[in-house]
Amino acid sequence: MLTSLTDVVALLKDPRSDKNRLYSSNEILLLCACAIISGANGWKAIA
Image 1 (cartoon, rainbow, N blue to C red):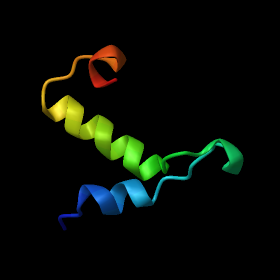
Image 2: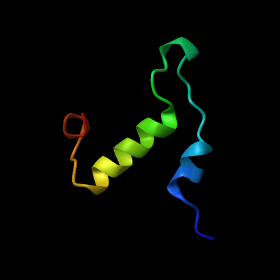
Image 3: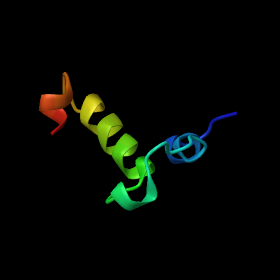
């Protein structure tokens, strides 16, 4: 069965404390996945 990337990411638990969250872990992971698919080769390229 095919599952969307957002469905898979939504299953992951966010280990960060509530007061330090500006963006959800889902948003961060999807941004990283899109950057890697676009050719980013590490954290500096993603940032």
